[in-house]
Length: 130
Image (cartoon, rainbow, N blue to C red; front, side, top):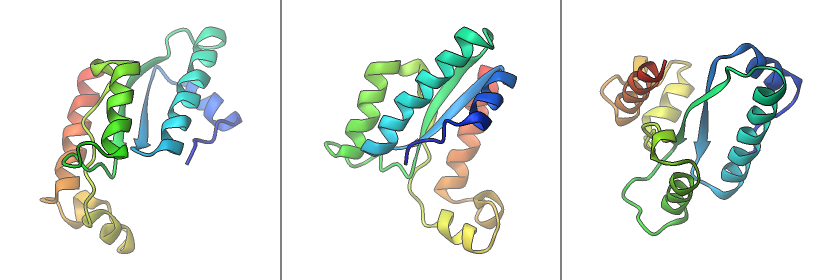
C-alpha cells in the first residue's frame, strides 16, 4: 500500500539525516515508493538539506521468480534509482507471520530463518551507509 505522507512523515524526515524505504515488490507499493522519494525531496529542498536516501529494500521478495511482476518491480527500481540505492532484500519466509503471531521479532523467534539472516544483512548494509 502507498505510504502515509502526512505531517508525521514530514516531521520525521525533517529531523532525520538519512532514511530507508521498505517496499513490497508490487505495483501499488512501487507507486508509493515514487511518492515517498518525491516527498523526501520536497523536505530536503525546503527544510532539511542534509536528508539523504540510504536505500530501498524489498520485503516478501521472491528472488527465484524471474520474469514475474515481483522481479520486474525490483528491476524497474534498479533502473530508476541505480544499484547503489538497493539494499539487501527480505525474502518471503513463513517465519515472519509466525513470529508476529507470537509477538516476537523474527530474529528472536527463529534466528536461523532466511528472514532473520536477511534482516541481519540489511542492518549491516545500512550501518555501512551511515
